[in-house]
Length: 159
Image (cartoon, rainbow, N blue to C red; front, side):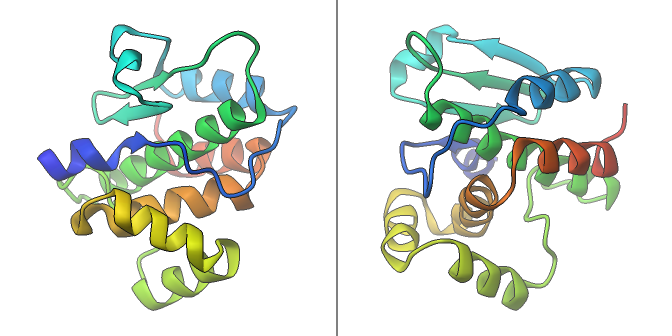
């Protein structure tokens, strides 16, 4: 369970952060699907950019006007929501697991989206048990738009 807690934390390593006009709608979709969104809760002072817990709570930490990095964090944490929803749909009790089942295909996709230096930085930051979850989340944040992630939430998550 400790690995799952670490796996849901987003550190400051966005691949290609971008402001995404669909982020407000993505947050609305998450709320409609039972995800509680916390803005700047107390644990933000621990250096988190954001995190998602299997209690269906997404915490977002930012200062002032949200930046491209903050939008990236929303997409990253949404991927953790999707990983959790997929685990629930598949009857997997581990909490948060990669959305893509095939490890070879997942690793190939991650390698196409993220640069090798980014992959190494993620692996250096997170424990081995969290590598696949985090690599997939960082790649998803770089690859998918907020609108695409909102569509995936409606596909994988239950209201």
